[in-house]
Image (cartoon, rainbow, N blue to C red):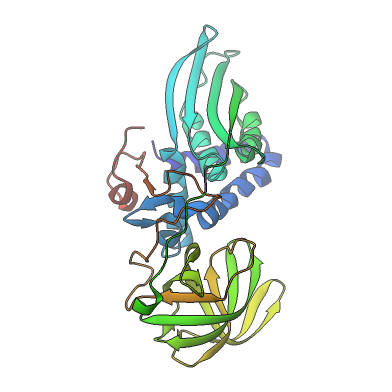
Length: 322
């Protein structure tokens, strides 16, 4: 089964049958990119965090990555519920990848023949959510319900205690070839943060993967990709614009070093961005296995691909029977 192909087929069918649902399906589609940005560090693909890999891909391949991650988090099999035919799904990481999972489940159901007219099939979804958080997967799946009138959705969300925080690793700043001392930070939007400051060692290029630590080297959050460098900047309509460059050298000051990263709220004893020489978006950054209070305890779990044909993503994830 090709998740992306089936999702597109679902969208085309709904466009013909009930076009009013299309905007909600598009929100799920775009939400999958948010899942990758916010939670991609929890899953490893091609030997690196999925959020780092995502930034090396064009939007087309990035969406394919989201589809395959969603499929890897669903264990689905046919069975019976209360004596009736059912598709039973055990779902992982519902808090972190709700849109990716919804896309994959929609693709699975689009692959199922509804059977005789009037026949109903139960779609049983079992998953965990963290206490005190919204059931984002449940909200996404509610969009799918009218797409499959032959299905009866049963969602069983079990509340779990938040995972215990894991002490963040220390980054040996004296061993880093590149150091950037931040003077101020500003959140631009979800998983995008702007740092102003100066390079005190080495150089920084667009596409580099940087560790984010306090002044002592304790990691604050997972590493992030440098998306843009602005020597002089200003914000217009939520976008950073200004004098842009691709390389920031030693002693140069940047008004905005834009990283694909989210900084947890709190007070820090300074903020340092760092990397070893040659560490870029294609290489594994130091401390990549960081597990924060908001992360799943199974951080770094590898995905498997649901597509049976050989492709770029089957080489990343390996093969898995649909």
